[in-house]
Each structure stands twice: as structure tokens, then as C-alpha cells.
Image (cartoon, rainbow, N blue to C red; front, side, top):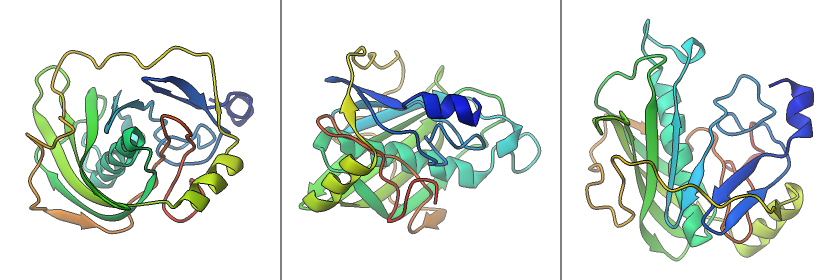
Length: 220
């Protein structure tokens, strides 16, 4: 998508309550203005988020294998968007990742994130990347997010010109492995990689939603 086309198209997110759209932005993970980004198409359910994609050679580490940092970004993204179901947009405070199997370039994958516990403004999450056809786990993660306060949420609403649309509601999850929001079957807490203030991601809400990325602007 060219920059001109991206600016003419307002990005949107599907939720069980319908579709919500906001201004195009530069988030590396989900921004439509970032032509070098991942361009994730995210779907939100109460306490849960998922996306499916295949990564091209731009995101290669070892030959034929997706770079681990890209996988961390995707895991962070689906965990952050999982806060949507609780109307609790957050920034990443801590993230731990286990890389279980290599993810091959060009092979379809599914990333799922879900909340496991909420305490005031602290939300604990988990996520995994799987092979859609078999459910084989390729990478897993746990995260800790700090929710934005009411003033910050209002600021984000205005900044990204959030508005509901008349689009269709979120499609049902494809048949296959499903991460459960109660955390059962979720990855463990041990980690072979640890990232604090993880890579860019977006967040939105069932009622009011705009992208939120770390403490900076999306894509900054």
C-alpha cells in the first residue's frame, strides 16, 4: 500500500460489538502508514486477540527463518490488544518469551494473546504463536501491562479521532487451537528471552478504541 492510499484509508479493528476505526498511524506492528511494517490484521474478543499472517524475507534472521525480534513484536501486539475486552489499554512493563521452534519465512502462522489476571491498573497476559493447521507451538510469552488512566484514554481518543463504523462484527475464530482467556493451557513463566518496554503495538477498546504504543506515538 502506498503512503497516499494508506492516508485515504482509515484503519479499523473488528470487535464483537462491531467495527471501530481511527486515523492512519505509523505503528510498526499495525500501522497502515508504515510501509515497512508488519501490517497486522488484528481481531479482538473479550480478553483475547488474534491474528494470522505469513512473514516474508524482509523479516528474516538466519536464512529462511523469521527473526526472533519480529516474533517478540507479534506476541507483544496480541497481548496488548487482548486488553481490549476489559477496556484497559496498556503499555508493556515486562515481557518474557520462549522460542520453541524456528518459524520459517513464508509459512502461515497464528498468534493469540489473552489476559490472565487484572489487579487495578496491572494486567497480566500470555500469548503464543502456533502453526494454524496443527496447533504446534512455535513461541510463547507472558507479559505485564500497566493500564492507561482515564485522562490518558481520553487523550488517545482525541489524538486518533476514534469513531465507530457500520461495518460487520468480528468474525468467529477459525477452527483450531484457541488460547483460553483464563490462562489454562497458557505458556509457563520461564523464559529464554526477556524484553522490557517491548516493541511497538496497538490497543483499542470495545467501546472506545485507538492505538496505544508504549509511552510514545505509534511508530516512534
